Image (tube, rainbow, N blue to C red):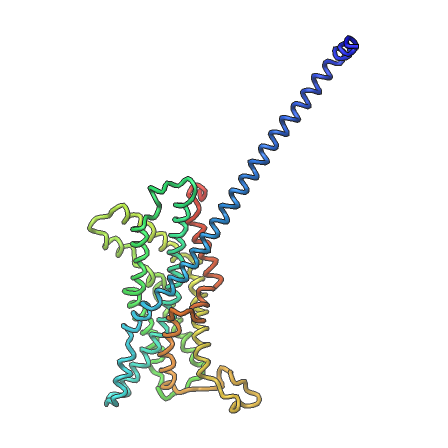
Length: 360
């Protein structure tokens, strides 16, 4: 029996060898495939976890942006009020001075100037902090990513503090320059308008459109948000440390973002929304009582009510408290929740949280 089996094997030896090779090959191929599938699955899981971690870090960074904006609004409001002090003029008017008309004219220009400046500077603050904190956030993500040495962070704490302190330009020299520009535009638009002249909300909106057009036709708005390269280098003329060089690099990267066409569109969208919300606030003072409105005239019509400019001035003057409010108001929320702001923030974060070798 054994001999017959042996003879059968010898007769079909080649077939057995071929079959064994095939079976062995299939087995090894299966093992190899399993190994590769496992590697792909592990890689996908790792990428998913990394993406989830990155998304969580980004969303946390946006909350930090929002809180930072709210914390910066009081000093911004104080800086505006200090330079455009309408309260002192109001006190003077109560004493019934001989130059009452002259004071009213000054109050007209200052009230409109500080409200327009408040809208511009608040929009700039939101956009600038979104850019700066997402640049920092991107680098911090890289610092905390796997394989990055904690001993050599891309943005050390001292650099972060020095870099973020550049926001003082918007609250200082940049704000002063913006006020000068807006004041010129307000004087050009409203300087010849009598205090007794009545304006409807639609006419008031047109005045704001003219003021905006003149402000926007001047120097780039980004120049009010960040100091020039020369100013930064002059401040560091005594000698540049390694941290200074990193800070200057961050400022240059920020300047590139601020000068981009995409940011111009985002800032324009914020300004459009900001002035729209300002008009919504003003509309509350231009409503006809329902009992007084004509049957065919909507009580909230833009031209239904007109007020003397002298009565509009106090209304305009008080808007800064709504625009620059650290308590989340509709005005500030509209800016913080603006879709274009969010999308641009994501682009900035994506750019600076991607390793340079992947960018290349």
